[in-house]
Amino acid sequence: MKYNRVIVWFRNDLRVHDHAPLISAMTKGAEIIPVYCFDQRNFHDLDLGFPKSGAFRAKFLIESVENLKRSLQSIGADLILEVGNPEERIIELATSFQAEAIFFSEEVTQEEKLVEERLEKSAWKLGIATEAFWQSTLFHMEDLPFPTNLVPEVFTQFRKECEKFSKVRKTLGAPQSINFPDNLSHSGEIPDLSTLGLSKPAHSKLGVLDFKGGEDEGKKRLQGYFWEKDLLKTYKETRNGLLGADYSSKFSPWLALGCLSPRYIYEEVLKYEKERKKNQSTYWLIFELIWRDYFRFICKKHGNKVFQISGIKNIVDNWRRDETIFWNWANGETGIPFVDANMREMNQTGFMSNRGRQIAASFLVNDLEIDWRWGASYFESMLIDYDVCSNWGNWMYVAGVGNDPRESRYFNILRQANNYDKKGDYIRHWIPEISVISGFDIHQPFELSTKSLNEKGVVLGKTYPKPIAKIKM
Ligand SMILES: Cc1cc2nc3c(=O)[nH]c(=O)nc-3n(C[C@H](O)[C@H](O)[C@H](O)COP(=O)(O)OP(=O)(O)OC[C@H]3O[C@@H](n4cnc5c(N)ncnc54)[C@H](O)[C@@H]3O)c2cc1C
Image 1 (cartoon, rainbow, N blue to C red):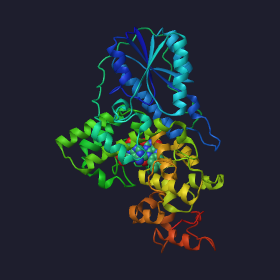
Image 2: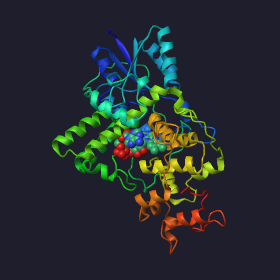
Image 3: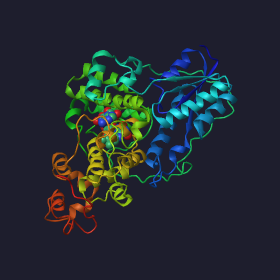
Image 4: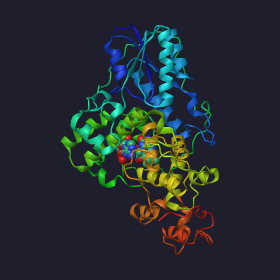
């Protein structure tokens, strides 16, 4: 189908490289109008009193949109900006710009799908065509060796079948120039945080990385991690670290907003394997990207179940809904240092390691027995790499209502602390008040707390709280 003028609606695909809707619109010879709409519904406060998307996330998003606008301008186009409900604003723009079609990237979960459906309905009524493109995964949906309703429930089976029977498609490259119409009457503005109802987050010098949004920054991180510091060859050994920029790739924030395409990362891994080294570590980064794919396809398969308390396993459990305990956890004040350190890191930077997420989530659901969806919502608000499928999929997994083939996956906090933070460097980094306790081993408070909590509690220090729960052993 030929179109004279197409709107390319950017969503979680804020890049110009490997961008299917953009490239497709170009091959049709159309004039292209790139558009991004800030959906204000994403920034409102939830019942628990925190915004659906918090300030760290919003800041990263704004930076990513700014970068996309600059990139488009550098190839002769621009990014038209809107604030409001995309399903209405995009249609208004299409009408006023006389666009014949709207191209966009397809999402999989409820809220995003609803926006797509409404937009499509309005567009069709007006005779405007729409085309949805599958992006964001390593393996294209059409190349899976099974239909999405038959995606295996066990990750290993999913991975093995994909690796055996599917191929990762080549990236689509990046356009050198775009046929952008002259004299558009409207270009809009990027809102600041206060317009979205948020305050600027305080900058913490303690964070693993000074994350900045945008395709250029994402590519810079890859360049540094793979090529300049040559770290890919040791990724598998370091990936469970907690401190510093380089224990893992830190690609997740750029992947979540689509500033980096997973296929681009994949091609860079292959190049690294050819030019530098191929080993377990280089493969393991791809292995982790397949986890990311997996959760996306699981969400596609199970729809709304991923947000329901009984999850995809339909397990009915008696979760507690105690807001005081929840806030102890969320604020990093449980009195369990290894949990608190991780929560404080996220609260002060918008990032937490994978190990930290597993521990903090497990403590909330297994030790505190709080409704796992509260934890997932809090992570949704805080994490700069929030990805609906990875977040809710991983939370379901830890809560025992998702794809974990094991009956219950319990992270023993003491053992985890001893394995991953033996000397307590990570705990001291985020809870400096603990380091002033003289005569204590940094991990001793765990043991003391589990033994004497019920009788008299444990005095850990002047300001650090007493443990709020007994750790299950
Ligand atoms: C409770 C919980 C919530 C999570 N929420 C999110 C989220 O909202 N967004 C998100 O991107 N990841 C989430 N993860 C997965 C994982 O923790 C992060 O992807 C990872 O910590 C990001 O750091 P990195 O980029 O350095 O990862 P690396 O170790 O360098 O891995 C490379 C990439 O592989 C993918 N990946 C790695 N582990 C996982 C995983 N377990 N699930 C899915 N993808 C993975 C990510 O895209 C990551 O960027 C969550 C994990 C848990 C346990």
